[in-house]
Image (tube, rainbow, N blue to C red):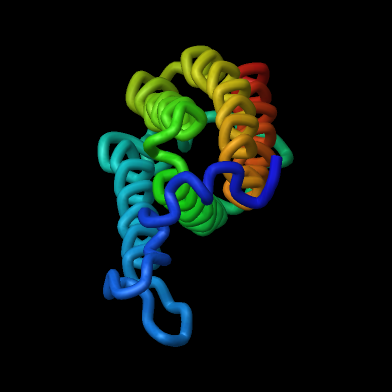
Length: 184
């Protein structure tokens, strides 16, 4: 597991070929940066979309007993924006370095799978007003995120490291979801 297990295979994809126009004289690779920005925007949009359907402003959620470890409501937007940004950068690294390889396809597939579960949590918890359904989704999400980290590590250790805070937050969120279910 190195910095980039497959970087040599996709050297032309990394924008390092002389005269390809994507790398300036100072080593700045516009294509890689634009890909990272696009991935960050995509992950943030996909991740935030379920909040349009339902969220913590509902009368149902306001009526729930809150666990003592429930953070201030503003913290969720800040944390999720940061996590989705880290996830987008990690996704871009794997996409750019390994999308044509078996390890890259597995990593990208696992990323999509965990993202589906991530997006499913809000409708299960908030829209369906079902604490147990939310708990089931988040319990399934945790190993999916872990598997994604392992798969990303096979491509690029840095990409895997960018997902570790996400796993920590999902762990915290699972405990929080359990406490909501136990209290209500």
